[in-house]
Length: 410
Image (cartoon, rainbow, N blue to C red; front, top):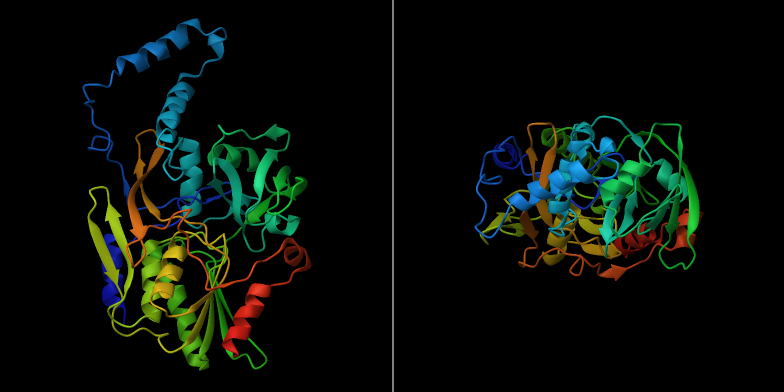
């Protein structure tokens, strides 16, 4: 039914990823629109504007090399990488980053679906501070008490400053399985920070899971942890398998759980939305640097058109999960329950550079069907707000899921 759409996805946007702001500790899962080794392209022109004096850069570099008091400790490669990181960070876009060869290697390993070691938490930015977007299900971070929205104040004995990037935090938190890291965090709604000791472990991230709940297992609880897998095709095959299981079960009620989902392949969000919507709905729009806007519309014949739908969202739902939940909300296809999403709707292209480093550059914005941007001050809001309190977190209660079941049983 969706073979033609899948071919289009594979040809044009197979590598579009929708996370950008979220960095899983030990690696980042930035938004990708293809990759390029295109150093000589217009992205990196040799010429400069007439008002830009590059001689100043070389002069400062030379002065530092010759006159810095501990000049014997200078690593020139670090100076250059630091200069590039500073240039990129001056764009004030947390999703646009320069990665050293070592950071790029870690990113690539994670993107290919390999195991990695760390605490299993996705980090982001909020008003210049490093925060926890969400701890992963089954992760050491969640088991130790890390919660969505936690502000990270200290890592071991190091106090984070406004100059520290998310990557700086990641570099200090990551480590081998079995070792410990102490995070000083401030939980949302609390006034006193707490110290949390976390033992790092090997982390795996399931992309989705399905269970049937309710007194008679009459509700499909379909949790999408992320819109990425080792490949777009693998994600699609897992989605199709689970959707077929829902269809075969005969249930007509469904909870699409996007809580803590930082995003993933943009195409996967479009593909998923197409299963819930009939022909002719706008699922998302793409806006490029020139202001051109392209619509991504639903097609005829979704497999989940007739299920009664509730969508669960929270502050850990970002990018691709916001695209999907926003589309379903504006199409009035399902009821959104939970808390406001993160607010992240940009896409990055990864430019692989000759020395193994890479530039993740924001080149696109994803818009909601009505043309509005997904931003921190324009996130997706639920029709029914249900907060998960610190007490709920500690006691293992899930009032959001309870409310979803209640709505479906009305």
